[in-house]
Image (cartoon, rainbow, N blue to C red):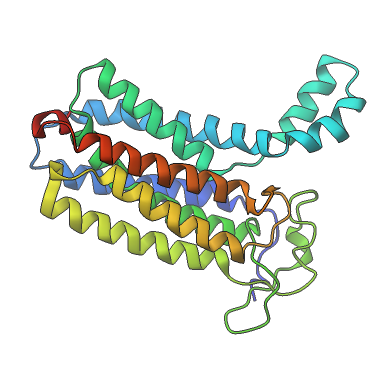
Length: 268
């Protein structure tokens, strides 16, 4: 299965562009009957792209920092060596790093220019799982974020041609659980659910909170089916599981605090 892959096509870029186009289309459809400014969403998408890029690469580097210090630092003898080693150590992306920085950038921007935070965040966040759906398709076709050893129905077997040294060294050893397409399907379902909630409730609920709670639960659970060796394990959980727990607890705390605010304050 997936023997057509040659390791040369940049599926991340292709799927990323497809995800961005789909997200923008959904936003344009959602704002047709709302009193919001299209130019503001252009700025929001630029900030979102920057946050995704910077945050994703930064967290990937931080997860691998112990290996970087142990394996790369002793071989760095010049600034050029440092740039080469750093660019390799930060070459991948961790979704949570991008997600958190995107939300932070969008929140700060809305506050800075005095936009209704919930109104604009709700519309943007509805599309997050849609974009992530395409991203996980890219993961499937690129061979990253692969699953545990698995030989049952829908198992994925990758050709040796797409092995990325240091990232998916063990990918072609045996067939893997299809965790990437499974999460893609869950992301698509989550998008549909959020879209329905938004259409019915608009600004009456926080789509951001619903999304963060839902995705943190999904991600915590599916990490048990992941088999890639670069995601980082700290004690009983992986890096993403610790982040999932932190997001889940933090979001619940924020919701409890917001319960003490007036209805008008909750919309800002």
